Image (cartoon, rainbow, N blue to C red; front, top):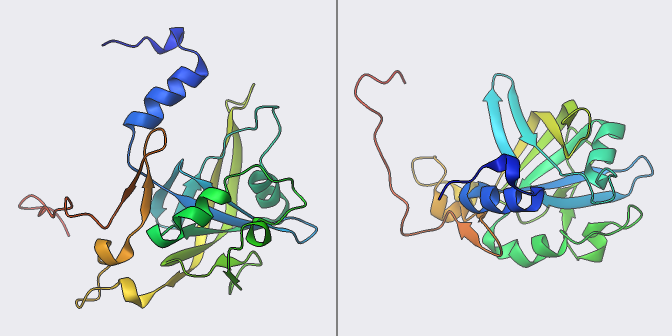
Length: 208
């Protein structure tokens, strides 16, 4: 099968890309509006960029009416957000927060998501997740510039909260204990807690 993307509608392009570029990690992003309303929303267009300085990227899509998502608006206004990683145990709560609530509604309250205060930024973090990254905004860029379909947000990680229960005896993160969700195509999700996981040694001579 050959797909000429110049002939595809955006919905078709999304379906083929989102179904094949998988699994994708999920950023459960908490932010605060200028009025102090806490927002919480999941995004699977998410990745680590670099560790020097420690930087994450999320890419929220533009709403169907062309407006910005609450997450983008809040981050632009306050310059702060928290990326919470989603464990399998909180899958239903995460799913509920993907609903399009209005900007005056806190998903923490509407969906019964427990929260904890952050240490270096104002937005709260999600209680019960294995990892939360407190971030400060580096850049928020509309893409494409002439007619944006998304915003590419870079955030520098200033602090992290790690549940020590996810660590193995050697002090390293155990993917089974971590048990994160990953996004796949359609209604499908994956888990890091999988018997299909395996290890590979780096090639000889790899600089460590």
